Image 1 (cartoon, rainbow, N blue to C red):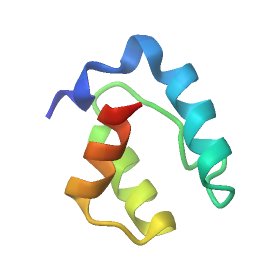
Image 2 (cartoon, helix red, strand yellow):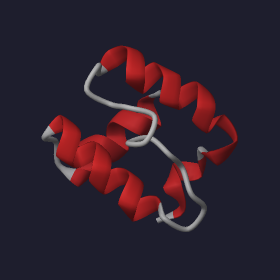
Image 3 (cartoon, rainbow, N blue to C red):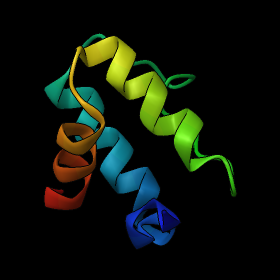
Image 4 (tube, rainbow, N blue to C red):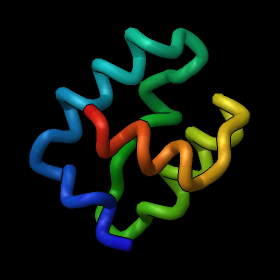
Length: 61
């Protein structure tokens, strides 16, 4: 999927997500190259959102 081409801005996006959703922790938002599905899945579980909703949310930031 190519994590939305955000790896260069991930620290900024991560902080925005944490400020928007207090349930998300640093470990939930740990970006590992090649493990995009794990990251999206973890955010899905914590927020109770669909995969498409999570991807749209990240892209909007």
